[in-house]
Length: 282
Ligand SMILES: C[S@@+](CC[C@H](N)C(=O)[O-])C[C@H]1O[C@@H](n2cnc3c(N)ncnc32)[C@H](O)[C@@H]1O
Image 1: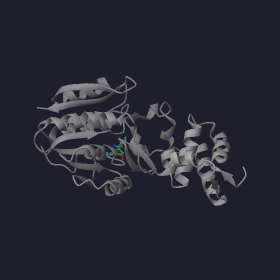
Image 2: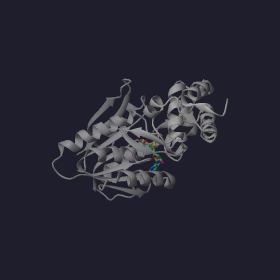
Image 3: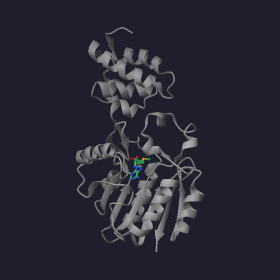
Image 4: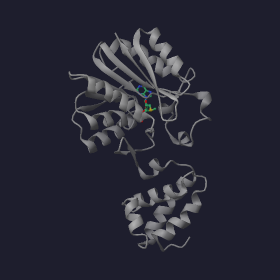
């Protein structure tokens, strides 16, 4: 590829290097916009602008990474969740659109409550869920926790950028940082992929941290652990909301029932797959 190009030509030529991607043109535009520290709208409006040889070389390095399957957010260092711009590194899961349902269901509960609530987002990763809730309301005090210290660094960076005063970031395994009957709402998108299913799911997971993805016992071990611990840490009438695999709804509901929860309900995501189950501790 020539080293002096205008934006239109560079995009056209480099798209051919991304044939394995389902969205080659979009990927090329997002990566070029990030490399030039601009946005896609600017690229369209300035498609005749010349890209310097240095910028072209830096861009092509990133395109080759994408050609090897590296997810776009790990290349650009950012992604959007609940319309928030989040910093992302390979230390955290790339937030998925279906997790926005977890946010929406949590907000529904918060908005019904007249009193100030205490909430924990367990396994916060980039901070996506806690920060999305905080972007809508400063009502609950939110503790965003994770076992992974490198993930917590990313969550702290995002919290610093967004500057929500009602969120704190804490290290610890699931509910260990919390006392008995101390929380009104517990939300989690825990690792829930069974080791044996790792070949079935989307291409990004090859590059994402194993601690964010996999769980023993057909993917149920961490979910079960949270359900048991949460039954002690929730206040009376407190809520738990859990994201899970599309085939795990029945097992999650039965685990919740077995541990004394009521008002158990599962919502489907936009693909009509069971995705989020909520329940109440009475
Ligand atoms: C599926 S990711 C979810 C990340 C983020 N909440 C999201 O929805 O994008 C699961 C997260 O749980 C964390 N995690 C795994 N085991 C944990 C444990 N025992 N205690 C706390 N967090 C844990 C991982 O580090 C990872 O950040």
